[in-house]
Length: 357
Image: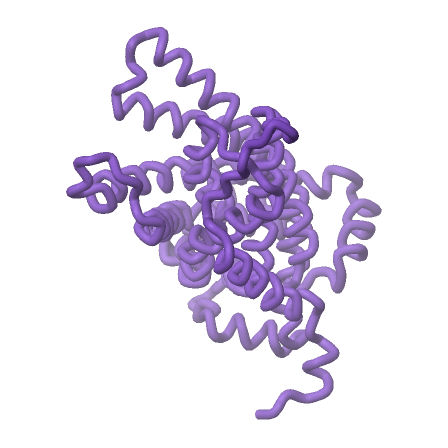
């Protein structure tokens, strides 16, 4: 059917910005080398580690915002599926039915419900994670070095996982408010971001943005996701990407992207039950007395299959997110003229994983 006038009215600015962002990133990367190396000259002082770290943090935050923007429709469909409850033998809301319900509610633009607060909220959250993760990983590496365990693969992996867990714990406190607002918009409880924020604050004050169990359930989802994904990424690297690489050559970027995508898919599947509980607590906090009550009610009323609701659109979001983040991250590094800094290049792996959580 040809698009009607109402469809154009309901299309939000984000639907126009997405192709522009992708074309801009691809065009820039097509004309430039992916690893920016600025020529040194006597007239220009090299960047300090702090400046380079801040620029990398800014690049990661902007990249996370782009990923959230481009893949927002899958996240919206996922939230609607997880929010819906199939009681008394009702059929669960399918991916297609959820998409049709959103289009019927407000056209194509409805697929991007809450995208503005998501993009704005994810950038400082990822930046905070980056800072905490980098600090903890550095301190952990120093501890391993003092105890002659720095070369042990298991110790290095454990250090990365622990740093990621601490980073996620701290970042969760900044992530919950925008997640709550975003999901209430996605489920159609409010017509706009401004009305959601003002109505929620008028009803419950700041507590509305931190529902009971909201921070804890965010951690219960995000920390295992980061750990599972990091572990899977390391396994794919060791058992596939670096197989036959006896000379220490750099792994092709497409292999890194495949490893990241596969690891993101595994982390997504393993943590989907926690994501269902998180969605229900943050969208309807008054219905549940806590995390365990929500999990028990879901199991008793809908069966174990309910914990896999939204898993398909979540996979459709998580798997390409790592590759898209890689493209956007390199684009913003070029744009910000980031100089390579020893020890910082290894952060890309964790940043790509973090951007999808």
